[in-house]
Structures are given as structure tokens and as C-alpha cells.
Image 1 (cartoon, helix red, strand yellow):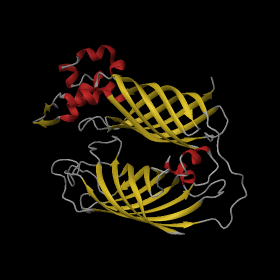
Image 2: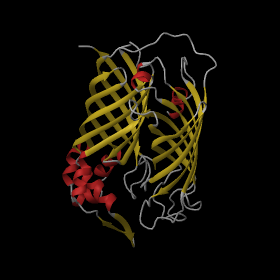
Image 3: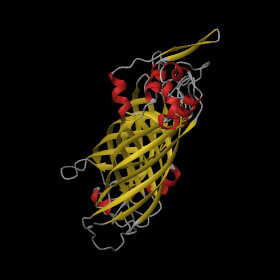
Image 4: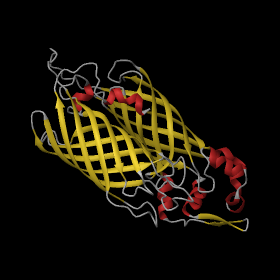
Length: 405
């Protein structure tokens, strides 16, 4: 999925009327938080990123105009996580977009958002690396956001400083998965390559527009249930939604979702411990009780054939989460062959987390969303979460129909 986006976020474009390409060096140090108790000691995190991008100022597309000439590109990174033996190094590839924060007042302050993947050289291992519960897979999702300020801006180079946040997570495909979270201080040097000529194109101010849409999608995800039931099993996702698109750039909607968890279903039909002792009625409707139903709101930035989407939702029905919480907030051990389960506490945080759903990811549309076509199909990669903590990673395919009232 990430590699599909490279030519779209990168420097290739069907026209370059007034825009320019640039290369940027981003050097940063960071402070990584402890992912768990007894987390390995570590020094400052050190990072080097190379950004290859395009400045869309003066672009002819609607999204280029209404986002005030954003920058898009691909960021390639190397990170020393501060402990080579237990945390190792990370190699990252992140498509990104950068916006001016207050374009009417200053062009020196901007926000960068990046979402992609990383390869981490060291991961959790029960025998050789038991205290690193941050990541348990080599390949992980990565998310980066930064506030950037221009300190010096010349004709061909710009020097900037930044304050950012970086997150690694495997999307709950294997446990433990506490994730890595870092705060970064950056120094950036950007070198711009302006075109030798400017195409003769008319000034283009897109007309304001609003149209409506409905959307259907199917997804298949992967997650790991608990430290004991840690095999990867599928999660099936279905959603219907509708809403409006403003200026072919800002897409808002409301919808319904349904998820079916294979792990939950297997736990029920195998009559595992907490089914026998707490929730025997789950066996009467095993499919229903292994499901989640809810409503959500969505916000998406449309960048031609690329969409950056965020969902926030409310779980109306997720009965099995009471077992999920108790197992994952407690622990299970075996003494002389006897299973001993210490359950997590049912506190107020459980009640909040049970009901709050979030989802974030990237989409690739087969037809440019700037076009007049009323039908479109997309593929996407997403992380689904419970109140921000990863629940499952998802690949999805969807259909969008545009219409006017």
C-alpha cells in the first residue's frame, strides 16, 4: 500500500506549472518513553531522515488551492533508538503531507503529518529480550507529526527547527504491543530545485463546490488476542456511510460499522475458562457475541488519488470486550500444569475504552477524486483502535458514489 503512494506523494506529477521539487535533511534527537515497567534503559533517540518532496504552491488542482499549496513527499529515515542490544535501530519509509498552519498571517509555521512503516531490528523475545514489550514484530506501523518553523529562508535553501512526536506499533497483530512513543527536536535543511521554465497556464481559482456521497467498504484485519491466545487471526469489517465533500478536498461523513472477531468466536465455541465461569450465555449466540456494532464520524483529506482518513466512533454493542479487558489487563500463568488467571480490574477506564472506537489510515483511489466521475473504487490500509490503543490492522476495499441533491 505504501509503495502505491510513492509516485503520488513524491516528486513525479503530471504537470509542474509553478511548483518546485526539493530535498530535505532532517536531523533530530528524541526522548522515548518507557513502554512498560522494567523497560530497558536507553539513551537519547537519534534520527536522520531524507525527505524527497514537491511544493504544490501554484498548483491547478482543487486540493492544492484549498490547502494553500501544501507539500507532499516521501521520507526515508534511520533511527538509533538508544539501546542497540534491546531496542536496536529502525528504518522507516513515510509518505507525508505538510500544511501552512496560519497562511494568512505567516508562511513560516507549518504542520507535517506522516504515516507509513518501519523495520525495527530488535523486538520482544521471552528468553533474550523479555523486558522490551514495546514491539514484538520487526515490521511496524509508524506515525509522525511535527510543528515546523522557518528560521532562515533563502532563494534555494531553507533552514527550520521542529518539535514532533513519533510512534511505532504493529497494529496489534502480535502481542505484546505497547508501542514506542517519542518526542523529537529537529533541525531541517531544505534545498529547492525550481523548474527551468514555467508552463504557460492560465490563472486558475477553483470554484467552490459541495457534493454528497455514499460509501461501502469491506475489510479484513489481523490481530492477536492475548499473551496466551497470541496466534494471528482475522477480523472482518463491513461499513456503510454517507456525507458530503467540500471543494473536492474535505470529505466528512457518518456511518455504521460491523466487525467480527475470529479470536472472540473461537474463545466462545471452545468454552474457554471465562466463558465457563463468567459468561456462559455467550455460547447461545456465539457469532453475535463475537461481534462489534457501532456508529462513527469520519474526516478525510482528499489529495487527488490519495485520501488521509480519520474515524471516531461509538461502540454500541461489543459484549466480549469484558473478557478481552480482564485477560489483557491481568495475566495468566501455569503452575504444575494448572491454569491460574489473575484478571484485570474493571475500572472507569474500562467503561470509556469499551465504547470509544478510532481508525486511521491511507487510501488510494483508482480515479482522481478531482474528476467528475460519479463512481470510484479504492484500496486502503488502516489501524483500528480502542481509545487510541491498537486493536487490529486492516486492509480494505471500498466503493464511493457521488451525487447532487
